[in-house]
Length: 283
Image 1: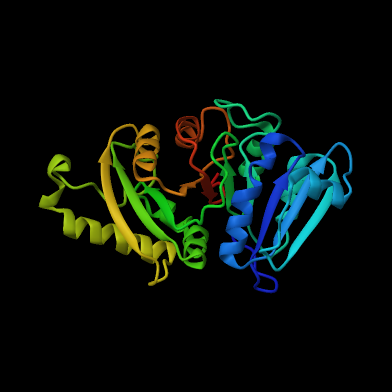
Image 2 (image 1 turned 135 degrees about the vertical axis):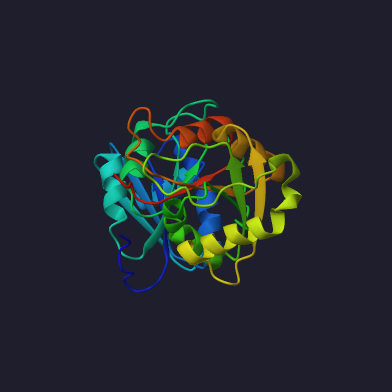
């Protein structure tokens, strides 16, 4: 269940730990806050307390283009501090890197990021430290969809964010995925996957209608539908790279226990594209 907004003002939280890897999330967070016209709350959690002036110098932080920047310095367990910060009803999205310490390609999801995304109730924008960190506007988002209504319902916060960003959404339906046991099958793929044009217009319209009905997509958000086939994680990564999206929207459906969240882990391993995780665990 989503929390009630406080003042109604969107706030972006940037989580840092003082490491070079975590600092690569600064530029995407600045870009996101500027695009939303939102305050940026920088939360630094580490074993020792920085002075605010030292932190600004350490990050070479230029916030001149933002109207409001708040810096909070805390000592404590990082994941707990980050999750506590999201209790603020005005926080709409948390920005953090997939891991801290050094910028090193190929590193898996770190322990802090795992704890945060396993329990966060707000969207989390995950940044790969080795990815380019230019302040690129988030204007083109990829939304893989499995056809299940439960997935579409979890996307409301992401579609709200897309509307606020003035972004377009491309829906990617990957044929060949398995439906969870006991879950409604939702929308089926066209009968002729290799000749989708036979049923394409009506099928694509059905996908858009389900997404709009379940996720409450605003009429001003441009939505396009694409169909592909193959292993879902690798196919999402391939499609995102080919079409150069600014972020991939994924729905989290577990607490990231061992053996769960295979699609998320595959996409993280195969692409450096930022990932916007939404949705609370269903079990």
